[in-house]
Length: 108
Picture 1 (cartoon, rainbow, N blue to C red):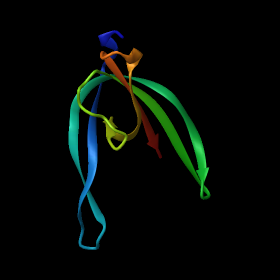
Picture 2: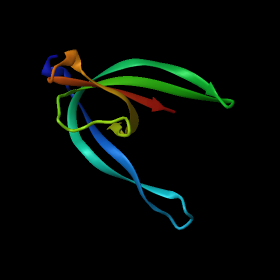
Picture 3: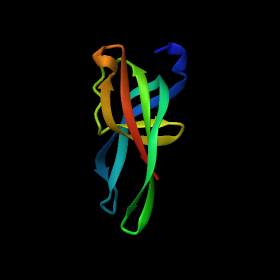
Picture 4: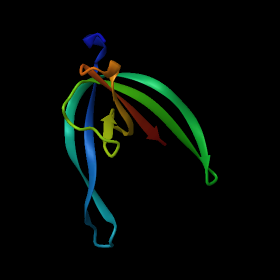
């Protein structure tokens, strides 16, 4: 991959529920795992899901980043352009340690 295609910045955060509010609801905090990573973004598709008489819009994107030793898990979230994408899969490109493809899903 040409490095010039990596022109988007993302942040990978891990949401945590560490405390409860006065009414007992969980208060979510987050810790930043990787901040301001340059990446390339490819749309991977989208669909509409009908569930419980509601219509949901689902869009997937593939975020390609340089290889990192940080452990990325599906419990983490990608923040891009003030939108959050749930991590669906993390795979190295061509089974080498140069780039990583991360599939992110946004549900609205």
